[in-house]
Length: 408
Image (cartoon, rainbow, N blue to C red):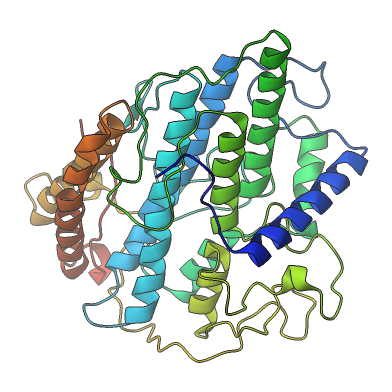
């Protein structure tokens, strides 16, 4: 497969994405308030600082940690579904997990493309896996707290907030903190927009000198190596490839580059009709909305919250029984149990297996992509061990549940 952008070969979807991106860029250019910035740039109240290539590498490492931080909560929800129950909900959550892992790998390709080395596992002595409850890495929406827990209506609402494109209320709250000197992003898409701006600035500076920042020699992960699904792996060798990766990640998560609520709603506006028959798969935000409301989107539903359907799905019902799940203790820890207990040992075994999967991804994304196929069996082993923990009583009569802690 070529390295060209494979993110969506549907002409209508490409056209709509292009139009929304252009509108968002126009709005950003018109804003008078200071922009939020990544590592390598000063806070708004201070003198602007020029970012370096090393800053960009660290920011992309943060992006990879951001993608990863959503995977344990999504997996806990998936593992809590009882066997043979809530099949469609399980399929939806599973599809999102697969794509989040794909995003991690593509960010790793981006890091390799600029001569960096992605780190999946232990980062400078601290765990790659966050300690839950946690906030999203990269100062994304600091009001949002994420827990490890079962598939519940409340947890799915949190998932929607994670993938939410942002709205005026969120942006205002974030901007108030930004104006006071903090660096924060109102959505994951806003974080990636800042990353892309930094990539473009550094590449433009390099081009003026007849050079490029895309000098990495490490073998990248290609579609033939990746064992997952959820889209095509994009290899990065140019600024166009970098844009393709970030567009793919944001589009699969939020559904558009920037907020789907960026413009006032108008009857018949195609920008907010994302559910036609020619759209193969909806973004994570909309898939979680389907689980939350127990309905599929109809082709005529609008994504805009001010539309007649309020941006909500109105199609065929999804059979979801919220009682057909194992209720686990929120944010379990091995230290909650005696070391000689069954729960402690099974948590340890699960965590060791998950860390083996991260080690596999680390090797695969650092020049040995052929080893990624070994991850298939690790993922199956991890699933079985997590399901065992969902059936074992822990504290308060609830299931012990997987704790997702780092094991050396």
